[in-house]
Length: 290
Image 1 (cartoon, one colour):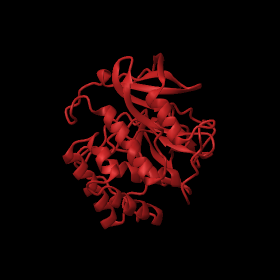
Image 2 (spheres, one colour):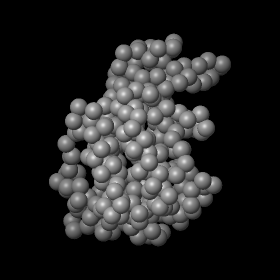
Image 3 (tube, helix red, strand yellow):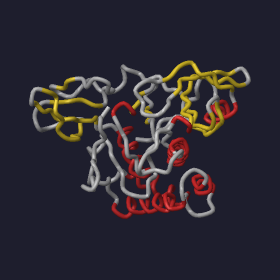
């Protein structure tokens, strides 16, 4: 299945959206609650165009023991750069810029389409806070069109099987997460958008030099990569050569060791030709899962 055509935001191209986000006037409207770091809901206006966006100032980041302080915003931008290099457009337009509270990440706000996705697996219960691409089912088999993630406690000593849709959009995202070493792919980070697009957000804990992959998208673990994914990885490998535009840009956002680890992950995926499996050295599923 080919990647969906890029859908301009009411007439703006991808480059136009980046310019709007980078150079427009930011107006903070409120704070997104429940996040561990400061996440501000804003509008950005430039030359008669205005869009909603998210602004995450570096000053609002909480220190993490396994990442250098003050680098999460840069990692979000690096994830966007890799997403664009794949051609899949899985991460909303994202830039690094100055704002009312200093330098931070600014990303186009995506309004999720609650009607998107699947009708539900047989016997499925809707998971509160998760899009319909994920569900809980009774029994030990996911059912046609679904992939098993693992068993989850649902209260009163009961467990249910957590499943995700066998959806090519999710499969692309699973490959992207493996490349960027995403340590926090939660259900709430999946945003189905109008027109059939699917976006992933919240990529601050990525690009660690050590294996940190934690995700709800383990359904294809160990399975062969699609031909499309292999071709994308081949292009990405070439695009990450030292001195390339992409490598130079990433060198401004992540450390040299992390850039080398990124190259190594791409090569490992190309060599194995398969989706990665949990290492067993790190929790495979993020907590909380939403």
